[in-house]
Length: 589
Image (cartoon, rainbow, N blue to C red; front, side, top):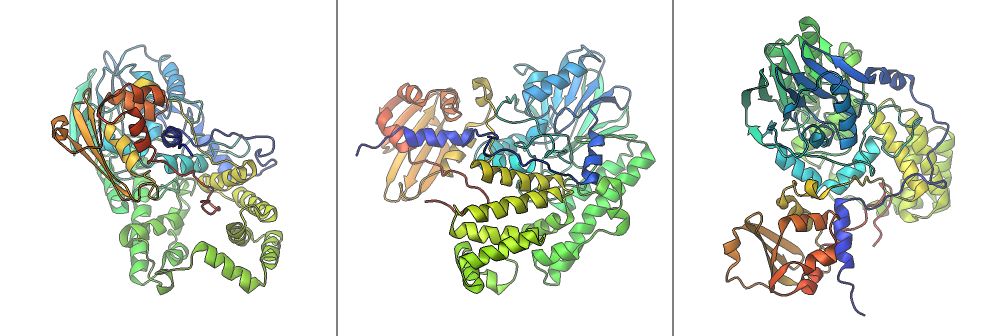
């Protein structure tokens, strides 16, 4: 049978968008008649929409998306600090800023790499042309988000922020009213042009500012200090909720020690105005000191007591039970669990300090999930008996027990309608009872996914000029992590790609289930024994991967010193992703 050499490649490029464009259908619609915790509803007031004047020339746009965007007005221009999560959100903010000042934007500052702070930049500076300030590691961290980790962080982020939920389900997102980023959104990221390591002092439009590296929620986090206004723009190292010392969408380990020490740097400035990247500003030196002191104390307490418990031999589950904030911190209005939780945080400390093994010998080589499900069936007497236990737990209001048992039943029989119904009802019940919006959204979105038979992935629009701004290296990282090990198990192929427009080249060596990719100078490929040798335009290659350029036409337009478009398409077909699955489902081979 003749093999389709283009289809696997088309499947691969889908990773840079979304595996599924499903929204809520009649059959898989949102669960109706939901309730929300009163404390979560009351928290919505903190995101009252509008532009708030903070200091004399500092304005914060709040409630237009997940993050704030901050405008600093200078003598003959503006500085914009953080640019929202999409062009649509940024456009609304800019329209409001223009009611205050029509001065041109002279600079943009990114406090860190998260998409809700950077993806609307082009709206404020069409085509670039203004300095973009950021930490020296920010561009590389953006590349990680949009390349090898994009699918899973997109999927888990859509669940965590409730992007597929409607009004009564999505009360707020804890640090903002909603995430304005979905398949109808467009992104306008501009790469940093002015970077630094520790500190950077500059003046733009008559505004003197200092940028200070302050790792916390991200390793590239910075704060902006405006000495004349005594205003400190702290990014995501403080917001009006218990911090996401760990986020359930998944990120590299966040060092708690670095975080509270960075807050100490902020305290040392003794600001009169504290303007966070989410929620509302805090005004008054004494008030700011009190809030920041409690905030850093809560972070240090979680770190120190987690390590104390670890040294006593506690497992992550035991830590989650053991570590509780002191009452004065637990009662603080700015430390309520509307974003992070203590239990999630101590689990992260354990993993960050010790890795995955919890010290229990039974977990060195545990039963597979299918083996564990089969064991429970044997203990219950039959699959029907286990299902009866799950139903009884649901009827008794033991929703966590019902959820866990439903997972074992679905593991054995993914199409079991009764088990899926038990799971959906358990998820909805747990979601309704959650004060933390991240957990609430995750529960409710999985229920929606089960009903609708889809995986929650966004498909934000990308323009060709936007795609070209992402580093070529990230596209090759995506190739590497999507090599099909079975299709390449017996192959030994070497492909050289020259990109004259970026004056670089890559050697791609597929070797029995592994791909070694090396960047090199274009001349380094001369004389190599290559199976395929291609000269390509980097912009066209990126656009093809991002689905804004036809792959057949693009491949045919490359120059082949060795091989041809058909052989190259077949080679690219080795890099074929697997369809993402729902959290409870087994992999389907």
